[in-house]
Amino acid sequence: MKNLIKYVKLRLQSSGENLHKDANGANVYINVDIFSDEQIKDALAMSESMFKQFNLDIAHNEDILVQGAVIQLLAGHALVESGRAYDYQNIKISDILNDQWKFEYQMYFRKLELMMYNKG
Image 1 (cartoon, rainbow, N blue to C red):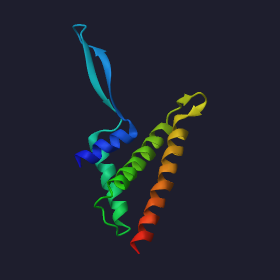
Image 2: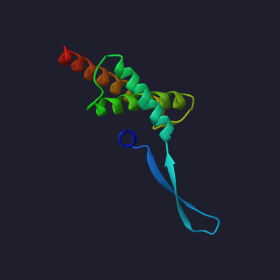
Image 3: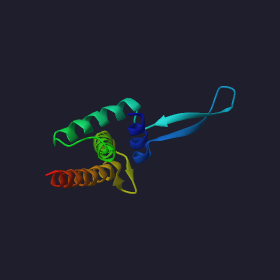
Image 4: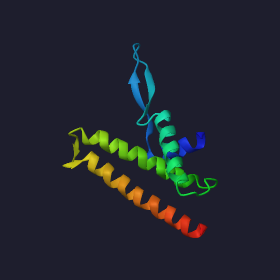
């Protein structure tokens, strides 16, 4: 599970550090994650559930579990961003996220279709 969380974070580039000054003026780096480990675990569980609906073997298919989790997280984040009025060069951030997760979703189901075809 730890490796899957790491892979999701790498795919999303959702972790980082931010430089702050403490009360004494010393530089302190604070971890800033867009998604918590708990949110990523939940998304991986949802991805696994979606995958099991197709009666496919999960072993050696970590990539599709990660892709399913990424879809769940991007879609959820797009909903959050759609409630905000934040634009980047007249393009809504939620539109960018929507495009990303829709593309990922199409590719995800294409992979599942190929796996089902190769299974039978």
